[in-house]
Length: 161
Image 1: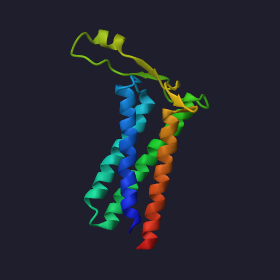
Image 2 (image 1 turned 30 degrees about the vertical axis):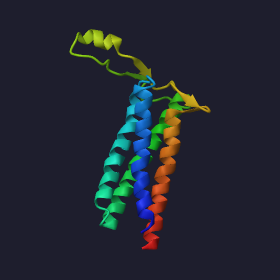
Image 3 (image 1 turned 120 degrees about the vertical axis):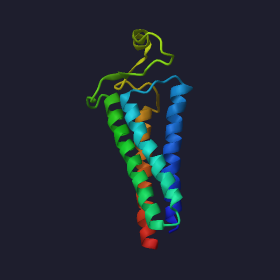
């Protein structure tokens, strides 16, 4: 299966790069994630773990392909959440929640002070966009395309075997 190594590579690289970008925007750019932003991150975290397992069992191609496929599924789920979030940001439909808070960093000080100092990040406002596409929109597009590519590679690999 010549397609399986590429599927595994995509299954690991895409969530690694997209999560890296999200954390860079958060910690270097000061863009605090909303609740739906977090919802998009969790499937990517799962996809990375599944892709690492796919690498760990690469001596067993069928099992490796299964875990690469599960990683692709998780990436696709993140993409669907991203597209839903982008629709909320663009006002195409209403979201499940209007906003969330990100806890303020700090020690065990006064809890009320921490709550009052926590930045409020709305899910229905895109804090950043490029060419009219928000971060959630890019996640939806990139994750969706990657999930389809992984699926196509795994199907091609089955035909090669």
